[in-house]
Length: 593
Image 1: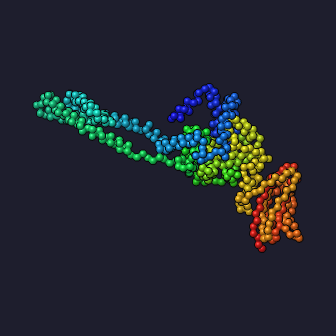
Image 2: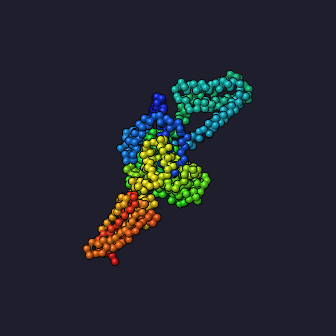
Image 3: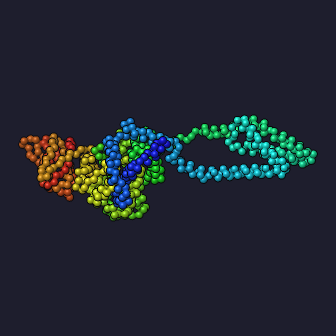
């Protein structure tokens, strides 16, 4: 609560701070970094935010200061998930978030609170009123019978409260419902008096004074009961104490992505994701967690994992390989939607768009379950977005589906992207990015990498090793059984324009040499030959020199068996005016006739 008051009192310090608050509004675009989700970005809506842009231009200094603070902890290399290594403010924020979550778990706020709020409003109050009305009616009926028998009954009713006053003088705590005990006594007095009144009528001898004596005699026991009533008073209190002594239900258990919110170091990793997504504002992060837990129940995440949603989109989104830092890489290929049939089957109506959304969330959930949530593990991924031949922003159905997906991903999957690499980027997308760039935080923009079609493969190789890059993007990674796997490292060589490059593979007797190579963009001459070590040996042409174009083949795989020592020489002749990226790897196997 103290932190709430501090936060609520700090903004209205000065008019200048009010302007800075407006500048910070774009930073809420942690929820706006539309390129950060694995889906094509929606069409820019610049007219909606002209005022914010104007304020941002007027106060550049405030933004620069804030961005420098963010950049100090923006790099994934600098950020840590080990609680003991966090800066003090971040460590304090993590501890405060844990306290809020523990209180919520103790009070069952994640699950039971909504039901508890509805019942008291609808049921208990009317029931109490009905019971009280019934009791009043009963008392009125019981009072009517003695009143018909004797006119002095009002005196008896006034005597009953006197017993209550004696209780207060004894300093004994009154019972929880103070009206019930006197009412019970009055009933007793009334019934006894009524019986004696009947006796008077039958005998016809007793006077009114005799009746009063009988009334006094009947009213006397309540004074004696005063000594016994404390035990009666203790009874309801003992019931309350028993209820208080009943053990409260244990705290509820809530997990996200298979990790409990409060358990061990893995839980800290989850909580830090939400804190970073909300710039370490504890209450905002706590609200985000509660909303995420609620959404996951409504969406049915646990049952979604077992649903069969088909494999029509397996070429649109797929996981393949790891980057140089060990992050799994997810490829989003939007050019596949040029297929009109696939497009219609995916986005034609609301039902199909809903199925696409469920498929995308299912794919993401399964990918997240494979991450390592240990503080020193890999718990983020790299997104590669291929925009070649992707439908433009004019596709209304696609824009609706991606907007919906972006909102869900940004609200419920914080800080799962280590890098966003956009390849084969068209001109219109670069223009769009320039327009939305002022609205993105420095932290978000630092994750974005854009590459034109000519620079796409080169850009991928900066972050992903060639043996991990799929062949369709210039690498050597292929599906199915191959001679080489991602475990076999690739050597990269840059061949200058109008230059020739040779590679030698030494071999021994009874050896089988296997190699594969590719030149990004090809349009070069390739040849291979075996040169024996013996001076009187003969050179063997393994592969006749020929010109290879991009349309011929992507990867050349070859082998050579020999029973004598020597070397295999590969030659790449680049006769073009552009430099070429040459990739190759080899291995030897034992050979016997």
